[in-house]
Amino acid sequence: MESLKNLRIRMAPWIDEDYRFQYGDVSITLEDAGLAEGDRVADLWKMVAGVPGCQFDDRGLTAEDKNGTLPLTSGTEKDPTGFEKTVWRAKRKTEGDLTISYRFLPRDVSGIDRCHPLFDCIQEENGALICGVTALAAVEPGRYHIFFSWDKSHMPADADAAAIRGSGDFDFVGTPEDYTFSLYIAGKYRCAQDETGRYRVYYLDPLLPDETEEKIREQIPPLLKAMCRFFRDEDMRYSIFFRKEPFTISNSGTAFDGGFAFGYSDSMPLIMEEALNTLAHEIVHNWCRLETVSGEENWYSEGTAEFYSVEIPLRAGLVDAKQAAGWITEKCVNYYNNPHQNLSGLEAFQRAWESNEIQRVPYGRGFVYLAHVDDLLKQTGRGLSLDDLVLEIERRRRAGEAYGAAVWEELIERELGEEAVEEFRQVMAGQKLIEPSDQWFDGRFTFSHGTFSDVKRGTAENALIWREKGEF
Image (cartoon, rainbow, N blue to C red):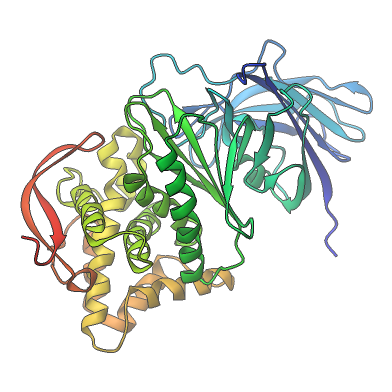
């Protein structure tokens, strides 16, 4: 049996009588740490994907062990992806359990008009959604028996706290990445869930229209069930967190293991007809990915999320053809009207944070390419579709087998021949543009050229405007 050290995390949200989140106190205790002088005690991102790490109060991060206060050094180091972290190291060896403590503050959002991904912690009217990416320091990598608990003594009596893993205290075996790349909520929140309690939705906004709340209850659990059924993962648990943002540009989502966060604002409110596709996209990220070290295979994770965020809601009858056609139009704009489609997958990944258009390259390219491959597979007349390839890759991933780009090439060569591999390489290198076809999506839709405009993408001339066949 695996012998693991215990790692105990305790979070105390400080929420005033008006349910305003003031700050959070965190203590993290590592059993029998056994650190030598100079060893890493903890680290926290200074900036990750354009989102700053949480600010501490004047005390900063402190540590103590059996012998009392542990002196620390702190400095800036880069992680393997190139993002900078603050790293705290021990100035002497430790004895016994090691506890680090700090107080983090909500993000100052003055002068900010958007935040994506949703890695920060901002104040909402009734509390705060806290992302561990920027609020929870990570101890040395490894597997631990992690115990997470809440201290609710500094909250109003009718406020509560919960996490992706559910309400109340919890424990699990995992790594520091598991508790940092996760979500926590504290305040006077509302929760909608299915009859099993497996699928939960949390939100703090007390002013959501009744119609919106009704759609949250009626649409999200069926969507989650349809997704889990398709990916052969019916026992999965999933939590969704909505947050009301003060930003001009909103309506974006961020996926985590077992859940995701979705932001909306007064200027871009939560409209379920529009948000459902973003939610579906983020849910797909629980499964579809290729093994990669460089990031250039993002076309697959983002492309499958884009493709099945249309296909599965449509198959499940959660949306009609008109709504699905609108989603297809938006996704094609990310491809055919993106001035950076000549970038290779690696170049797009390396330059992703230069602009929103560059960031969207793998989304549009992956979506159009997979719609094209799905059509080619169906044309073989052998009863094949993209589903077969995607589920085969997912099977290999779960079985611990290889599931990188070479596997994708293996599968398309087997089913479509060597020319399919050459086409794939040209498309991903930005050297070939795929021609649109009204045979995609089982020939249910067709397109004309026109002007497309929305808040996030701006105006695109000569865009492909999709509609159900017979509507033109």
